[in-house]
Image 1: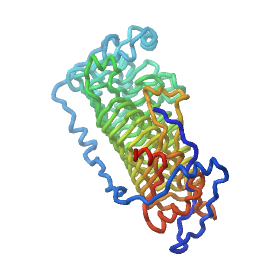
Image 2: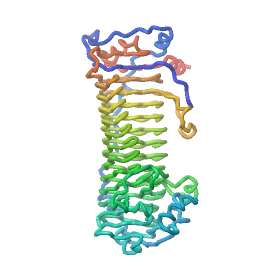
Image 3: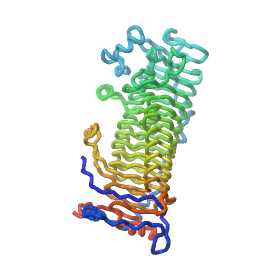
Length: 524
C-alpha cells in the first residue's frame, strides 16, 4: 500500500494577492529559477492549467438537526413501569465483568480491594433509582454519607434488562477508588441533573490523577446498551487500562461479541461537564451516538475520542480545552460517516481536532480551533473528508495539516495567524515506525481541493503541498502578508508563479496543479 515519495514540494509563501494592474502584480517577488539539472527536471514534473469551475461548486452541506437531542427528550425515554431487582453477586462468570475479572492477576486486584471474593451490585429486570438502591444494599457497600450524597464501595452493574436512573435526588454519587468501585452498563443508564465523582476516601476528595496505571473509577457501557447523560458533572475518572478510560461506550471484545451477538451500543451525552478524566469520552464500534453541548476541560489524554469502526456520530456544540497530553478531539481508525461541527477546541497539548487512521466520509464544519500547542486541524491517513467553514486561528504550528490523505476538500475555511503554514499537505512513509500496517494501511499520497476561504498571516505561508497527486485552487484569498516582498512561490513551482497568480487572481479561474506522469497514466 505504500508508495515512495516523489521529491520536491509546492509552497505558496505568505503575502497579499493584490493586483497592481490588469497585466501585472504589485509586491510579487520574482520567481527564482531552478539552479540544477535535478531541480529543472523536478520543475517539469507538474503542469499548471486552468480547471473548469463548475465541478468545484458545492452546495453548503446539510448538517443534522440536533434540536431534538435534549434533556427533556432523554427524560421521556425512561420507562419506570416495572420495578427492578437488586442483588449482590460474585463478579466471576458475569459477562459484563469478564474484561476486568478474567485471569489471576485481574482477580487479585479486586480481592485485595474488597478484602474477599469480589462482588458487585446488580440492577436487573426493570427500573431502579439510585436513591432507592441505597435502601436495598448493606451500608458497608453503599451508603448515604450526607443528604443526597452516596458512597459506593462495590462496582455497580446495570444488567441486560435493567434500567438505572441517577437523577437530582442524588446530589453526588462517589465511587470509591480504594474499594475499586466503578459503573458498568449492560442495559439502560440515565444520568440526569447530578454529579458522579471518582472518590479518594483517604483524602475525602476527588481521586485526582496521579499516574496512568493507578486505578480510578470509570463508566463503561457495553454492546446492546443505551446510555444517556444530561446536565451532569463527571470528574476524576479513568486510567490506562482497557475499557477503563473514563466514560467509554464499547461493543464487547471480538470473541465475546461473536457469542453474545449484541447490537452496537448507542446513546446521547448532552449539556454536561467532564474534567480530570483519562479520556473524557471514548467509544468503540458504536453507532449514532450524540455528543452535544458539553464541556471537556483539563482532561489527561483526550477530550473526545471516538475510535474503531464507530459511525453515524454527531459531535456538535462542545467546548474542549486544556487537554494535558494529546488532542482535544480525535476520531481514529475507521470512524466514518460522522458529523463534527460547531465545536470549540483550544489550548490543548497537541492538535485541536484530528481525523486519523482511515476515517472517511466525515463532515467537519464551522468549528473554531485556536491556540492549540501544535496544529489546529490534523488529518492523518484519512481520505474523502470535507472541511467546511472552519476557523483555525493562532495555533502554534500548522493551521490545517494533511498527511497521506487524498480527496480532501477544504471549502470556505479560514486559517489565520498560525505559527507555520495555513494549509500544509505532505506525505510520509510510516513503514519503519511502530504502526501495524495490516491494521492501519495507508498510501503515501496527498491530494487537495481548496475553494474559497482565507489563508492569512500564517508564519511560513498560506499553503504548502509536498509531492501532491493533484491540487486545485479556486477563489482562495491570501491576505495580510507577513513579509514585505508579498507572495512568492518556491520549490518546483518557482517558474510557474506568474501563471498561477494570473489564473487565480487576475482571471478568477480555478488552477489545477497536476503531475505530468499522472496525466499520462490517465490517458493510458
